[in-house]
Image (cartoon, rainbow, N blue to C red; front, side):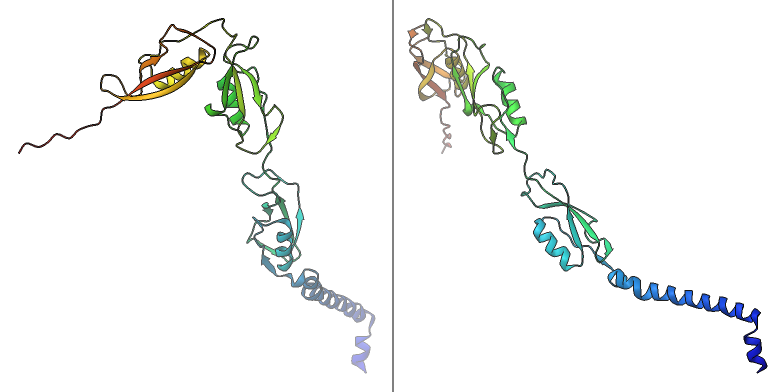
Length: 261
């Protein structure tokens, strides 16, 4: 009886209340830490984030879902040599640890940058070809044509195909037409003797003529691939675009010396 009176004594009741509150707080903390939080974070364990690189957005979503994560698609970026819609970045990175339910931010490729034909009319040939290459297009010697022009300075682009502003596939060819200046009143055959064949072709083109038949002749008297004869001869007057035939030197075949018996 005495012990009960001591337990219910006012001073003891206050102490017992404090102890009860402390025990309740400990119990609540244990319950929150061991039961509630794990349920909220799906057991609270961390898992490696899967690699989503190279997948489509749909494939990435399926893989993330199966691993217990979710994805958020962000603004696409330019990706060279990567199909449009393919994942090129993810955050957090693959294999880093995160709790289930974590959001993975993914960035898909928006495909190759469109190649727009530059405006090269009025430029000289070298600058025009350089601009085409810088635009991801091509323009080689086989894509170049020449014509007389009364207005465009000699050596500048007077026309291009396709026109400026058109969208092309990467590496597409841009054909250029180069001015040869005003058309002369008379056309005379230039001197081609001992000129390398490529130089002779250029000289004829600039004169408003073209290379005709090419005959190759074996000789050791002239450097290989040089003109050793032409028809018509230099100085003759011809029509515009006339073909000039040439004979070109080629080396004599080597003969093995017979060993003396």
